[in-house]
Amino acid sequence: MSSYDYDLFVIGGGSGGVRGARVAASLGKKVAIAEEYRYGGTCVIRGCVPKKLFVYASQFHEHFEDAAGFGWTVGESSFDWKKLVAAKDVEIARLEGLYKKGLAGANAEILETRAELVDAHTVRLLKTGQTVTAKTIVVATGGRPNPHAALPGHELCISSNEAFHLEELPKSIVIAGGGYIAVEFANIFHGLGVETTLIYRGAEILSRFDEDLRRGLHEAMVAKGIRILCHDMLQKVSKGEDGGLILETLNSGTLQAGVVMLALGRDPNTEGLGLEAAGVAVDERGAVIVDEYSRTNVENIYALGDVTNRVQLTPVAIHEAMCFIETEYKNNPTRPDYELIPTAVFSQPEIGTVGLSEEEAGKRYGELEVYRAQFRPLKATLSGRAERMIMKLIVDAASRKVVGAHILGHDAGEMAQLLGITLKAGCTKDDFDRTMALHPTAAEELVTMYAPSYRIRDGKRL
Image 1 (cartoon, rainbow, N blue to C red):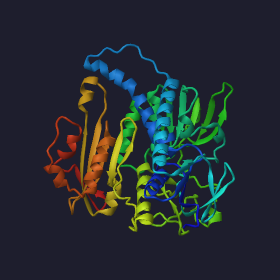
Image 2 (image 1 turned 60 degrees about the vertical axis):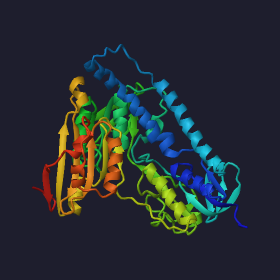
Image 3 (image 1 turned 180 degrees about the vertical axis):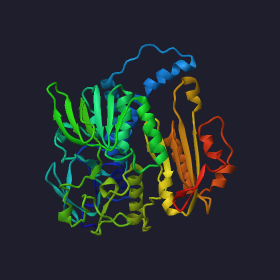
């Protein structure tokens, strides 16, 4: 008979925590999971899912415009922000219910309270003040937007969290940041009719992505009417006499906006969690330090997902949870695999990518073959839209293995998921060449680029 109240206690009801709790409970373990806000975590409640719904909403004005080229006459249209928010809230509530249903069905105990560590085996439930014990504890509290507290007037700004619940759609917005959150919301707000400015201190948006896609997206966004200010940053935000916001910038003078959104990174959500009391080590950013099996320096405490600041993606947190189950409960120590993770930026146009960028591959391999195609998609020929797709394959010349695949254009994320399987299987460029094209599709370009556009040797283009 165990001397602990639970075999497993999970702190945090996001994708990683819920998966770990549900599967452990289904194995017959006595499991409790605590969440202080809503079950589903960042992705379901205030991240990927509602964001993608907003992306769909923001695309319709272009669909209406494109329809004319195909013979359709579309009448006067209007947009209701509050109706979109309400519909989104209904769907998020449904998904949260499914998360809870899965936990309940596995006989996990669902606790709606903040939980904090007292020591390595003890957790305090703040709603009741009760303390409980567990043999194993998993910390899966995720991350939160960096408030950029050093910015004067930061309290007047919103983060991506608040963007999903604005009472009114602003007439203008300035978004600070150049990562995928900033870029996606810039496209969302612009698509919904908001005058949008993106301000970023770097030389180009999306610093970790392939240079061709970064530039291609930048040009497309500017062509749509989004203002992008690179090599710049906010210096101060204050309230104007008319209730709007006045922004002082480093290089672009004074700007005005109805709303300012800060998308300047995310921090691990560990403040006040009791990690120090339990002896759990964190790094300088507050991220929980873990080994290759997601175990902290305290043997019975694990950490999963964004709270560890490894790879901040929902499927990664779920994968880490499944590796934890194998390691802790199936006598099969399993390390999470972070190689070749497909990634998408749901901008307009969309980015889908897997593997190494040209720049990264150039540092790792002696010689590369780069296959690149840029073309006008079929749909744009009748719609008259001046858009271009970019497709790019990065090939190690020695082994012929495809080490990177990058797409800018419609459905790029969907294609990247399938390319993820291809690259994970270790397919070579010869495998691509032997694959029959499916015509007419944009994706056929991936298997019809027979001659390299250029080569790179020792980091230099030939």
